[in-house]
Image (cartoon, rainbow, N blue to C red):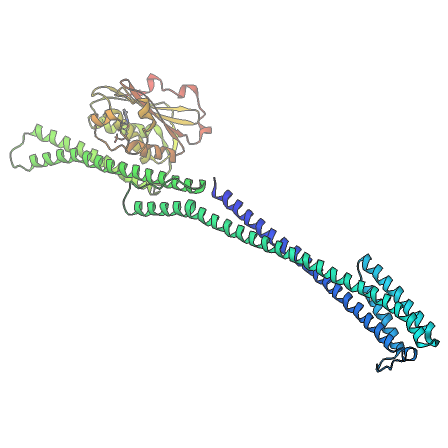
Length: 488
Ligand code: ADP
């Protein structure tokens, strides 16, 4: 599973929990507000009913003229009646349920009944008046009692409901908190186990690798991204180890290949400086050997320098218009002048094959191909150097009848420091010439091809873009030079 997916799922889960918590908080506060309102209205209902009862009793006590009871109240009967009406109106406004409205209607009815009978008995004797008034008063007080009881019950129901919600809120709050703590804890545990540990392992592996323990590899575990990272590091470590191995092999190869010409030079120098008389013929042979070895050393050091320049990106061409025939002829002449022990032949077309090229570099490529052809074929065997044209390309081929290269070896032929098994036994070299040659040809916008069969021979073909192709249209006969073109 990928780290991105797991983190997204965890964050979505925690966000959902937080949202659920916020939503329940909003619902809870809304409900709390309603509960407070309904509780307030119930209390107000009780207060108003009791105020009405007090007003009624005070009005009864004021009936001194009727009942001969002395009145000590500072309020007049009219004020109390007005207060009764205003309390009734207030109670109606405060009532929000149909049942309470019905109870208030009943209270209004009984109170008005009491007030009417109070006016009616104003001129009657006290005993008779109180006989008529007391039942009316009692029924009005009973109606108000019902109103009080109703409001008290309402308050109780509201309180019970609030208690239930309180419990629910407690359970919900604790559950959400527990889930968040558990979710967060699980996420932390998972991160520790599957993210931090693999990361730490990887960082240890990198540190160990950096400290020189080149066999160290990072464990490929944890989420996909970390596995990828560890895999990339391991591949990089493998490739570094391979490169290091190749460099060591290369150094060993260079040392080994330098040793042969150096010991030949050492022996020649010892012979010349021995002080003994040396026959002329022997001296000539020794000098020829010295020349060959110095040339070989020069080529090896040149290849090494070029390879380093190419790797460091410091490889520049100085282009000029040159005839490919001249370049090929110069290389072949050099070998022929040096007394080549092979049958080296040059084939040139009659017309110039113009290139926009760095002449020294193209000659270097041809040198490499010709020297390989000579190195990896029998003394006396034939080697052809052919210059031709194919379409807009100049084709420079070097054909030998030597040891050849197997298909498997062909695949890595241009890789630096690669040498085929049989070539290693046959001739010294570091395996850089072809890789340098390919880079030079590619820098000219061309390509290098090879055809080879073990035991039969090899053909290396360098294809370079011709300069001003329009001025020299391709002709089919250009591709292969005629025997008349041959220069021996
Ligand atoms: P070097 O010749 O110094 O080893 P090169 O890069 O020129 O390096 O060649 C790389 C390898 O390619 C040689 O070691 C040899 O194995 C193989 N090779 C190149 N040219 C030929 C050839 N004409 N015939 C057979 N093998 C060849």
